[in-house]
Image (tube, rainbow over all chains, first blue to last red; front, side):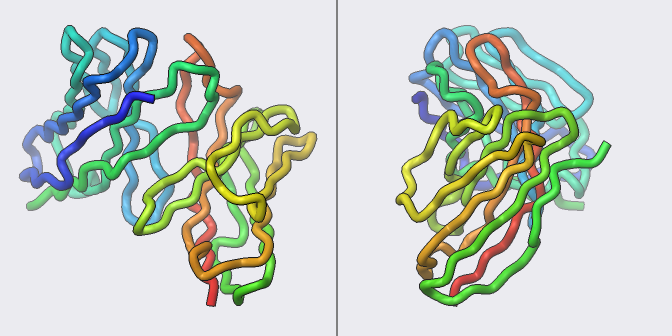
Length: 112
Length: 117
């Protein structure tokens, strides 16, 4: 399975864009990049996923580099409620179903 | 529609006891996965069920077991509890298992927090 590397923590000012990087240099061609977040005392919440094209939904944008070795999750206008641990996950390429491998994630602190 | 429901939310057991946790997936979801979250090991995959069959299993001892019923509800059991089993146990559901090009999101419940004394 491809491993991911994320900064341990980041700060962001409320109202500004939060850019969360993820390195997945060993990703295989058919592996997807997923992002989840976990707000304190809650279960993880799906944010977005992508293969090679940039993706956008109502929560965030996902930018994947052309070589697919890294990606960035962008929260365009961070609010205090976006304070959470953000996990970048590469879904296994074998038939591993919903077996996700979570790393340590990035603890994002949005400050007023 | 209702989310993933896990019961009980909190429980305290002593070493050597056994515990059963329950998970009701989102209506229509047929795949249920279980994860353990501890401060030291983070989120770790336990097992996944689909159509009452275990599809995948994580690297946990045989004391950890689970099952899925015909209505897609799932239970997990931990026997002979150890102090290290203290954790937040999370259940996640999806329509079907993610496989190949069929991608999808997991919907997690709020978890069952187990404390072993």
